[in-house]
Image 1 (cartoon, each protein chain N blue to C red):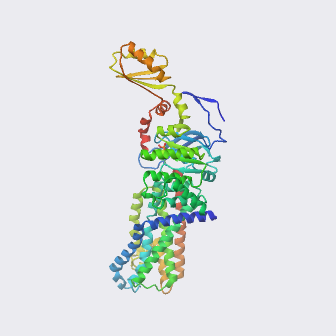
Image 2 (cartoon, helix red, strand yellow):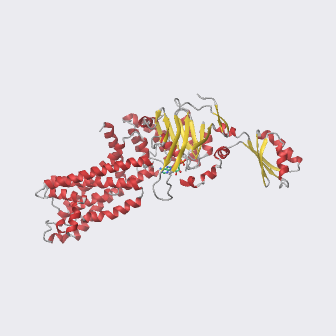
Image 3 (cartoon, helix red, strand yellow):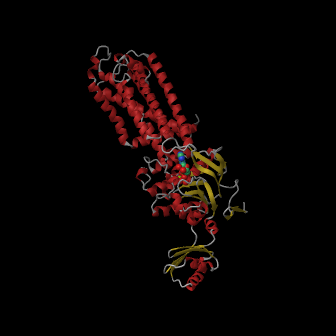
Length: 356
Length: 259
Ligand SMILES: Nc1ncnc2c1ncn2[C@@H]1O[C@H](COP(=O)(O)OP(=O)(O)O)[C@@H](O)[C@H]1O
Ligand SMILES: [Mg+2]
């Protein structure tokens, strides 16, 4: 295991827990993929570079999150790792097999829940599962037992005989996961499993993912464009932007990287002299990055809670009243802003992000 | 072919067959359309047999192969729509991620097209028989007709699939189909004996695969079957269907590159 620290241009990211190529469940190096969409719309002779040297490594038995806005290249990564698409350059192994040279072995080792459901809407839930098992060579009572088990487990037993087109969004997504699990894969790919689900169904899916990763020891590669989802589920995560990993680590490491909590102070009245406010707060130890907008003061503090009394005292000395103070831990939103150089929501609304 | 290809083909065909059965509207249209054509064309052209040189006693006898072949073309030329839907829905990608043999996916299309066309043809034969049509060539003649129309169906199904995977727009399939169906049918002996056509039409008809299927079928169905005509026209049909399936395999590979 590699325990040395890696220096990025932006700081030091401890690289603990990054497995070597040999024992990683998923190991991708420098993946590059360019699409050449045909005709229609704006012509791009040089193509769309979906992946631009993406590398990730996933430890067996853990949940790894690929977090990024729409169009970042998450689905393309999943397509390459699941043998659906071929990379232009770079290499990847999944469950120890090379995706380009041993696709059939990779296919038998993985389960996939694609961004778009692949279930046949005209067939029943049970038929979808049976067919999936048969394509992996499962037959007879062994297969029917597995299918019944999955139907019960994903709470689809009552709907098993109904055509899939009558399923709700949450049911369909659960069926998709069940389809991905029929042949008991070692590595499960979940491409935006909760996008478009209502909050209740999303929470249920989160619990299911935690269960799969916990008790069953599956390796899960999860992509998402929800910061909170990555934060909650992923043991490690990579933030992807424009086809490359901008930073990776555990959610806590990444947030810890920002060193400090966010401090927001709401003044009782407008500050007459901006510089005096900044000066006063700057004198408090451990407080930095002070900005003032109207009556709102924002700053970072190494230990937010400890800094609050000193901040209040400093403002009191220059005769400014305080209406409210809030301290918050840095969020992945802050991490994204720092490493991708733009906020998550603005990345979501760029033209290339508006694609899907 | 390995056993895995055979079993994969079997399961993929079974899936398509179940989908066909589970969409009763689709099933009913496949059955009702030929009835309407039999009835309409039968009433409209009933008296053309009186034209000297037409060479058939009853127009219904003449019409049954025509409607069978026209139905084979018209129902299979929409195959690409289904493929397009599978692509858009992600079903095709789901299968491509499994170890299923790639050839099985294509085989299933071909088998399904041939089977539904054969089924539809048998129904039309029966309807014609109920309506009083005579089949002087007997069972052998009917079998040739049904096989020829099924091969013709796979030709149009495979071309339609290739087109769907290549252009990926419904509009193109709709446009080409609407454009092709009537000319292809009327430039064949489906409704009118070729000997009564203007000369240029007879020339065009000679190169029309729809006409090959009809020639093969009619030659086998007449009281004095012309087996040479059956073999030659049938041979061309089989060759063309091999080419069409090959083309659709090629476009399938190019689809996989664009995923
Ligand atoms: N099949 C495709 N053909 C053409 N362009 C594609 C295709 N798939 C993805 N892209 C483009 O590649 C980029 C990355 O897409 P994708 O991997 O789907 O992003 P994400 O899953 O992170 O939203 C986008 O700009 C997208 O438009
Ligand atoms: Mg995606």
